[in-house]
Image 1: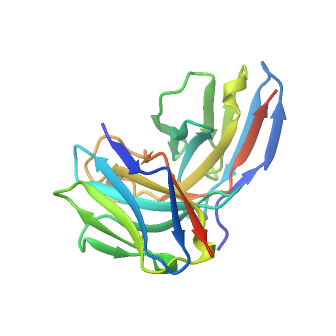
Image 2: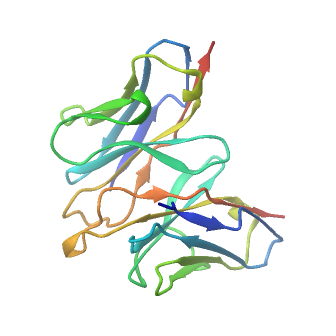
Amino acid sequence: AQSVTQLGSHVSVSEGALVLLRCNYSSSVPPYLFWYVQYPNQGLQLLLKYTTGATLVKGINGFEAEFKKSETSFHLTKPSAHMSDAAEYFCAVSDGAGGTSYGKLTFGQGTILTVHP
Amino acid sequence: EAGVTQSPTHLIKTRGQQATLRCSPISGHTSVYWYQQALGLGLQFLLWYDEGEERNRGNFPPRFSGRQFPNYSSELNVNALELEDSALYLCASSFLASGGIPTDTQYFGPGTRLTVL
């Protein structure tokens, strides 16, 4: 069974500081990994994804994440936080090709990012 | 290109009633997914439909059901509403690659907020 753990339900940073949101996963097959962002009273917006190939993936709004198989991690980073980055962030995993849990994204519990001026 | 749309935005029902939520996928997408985002429970996978068929189901009771229409839009029906069904219900869509394997990305709509009184 798949699972996702996001370390830290709340992260607070100053504007201009590094953003680091942690995500660890477990999966019985090579995973597909995603980060989504949710602004208040809105749906989920895809930030970035890892399927195969290059392990460092770049997404929208200056975010990037690195897939580390040995550490089963997919941490999200951004070099310099903006006030507009304040939102809730979700890490998710799904089976890659050949997996049996078709069509199912398993989400972490979410991390609320607060950005202070 | 229009994104995933959901209606209504808000829905208020009383315990024991039935609720019907609707979703229109992105043009060209054949798969529709439903997720429940309840306070304190996070994002939980409900159902996956593709080409009119239910392909996968999460750990929810049978009173949660749905269907997919020939135009790929979908309905989620919740019968015998309980107070704990109050949540944001998110719909997502994707298209299937050849061989029936889900492609890697699900695109989400803005959600329907269901309140059960």
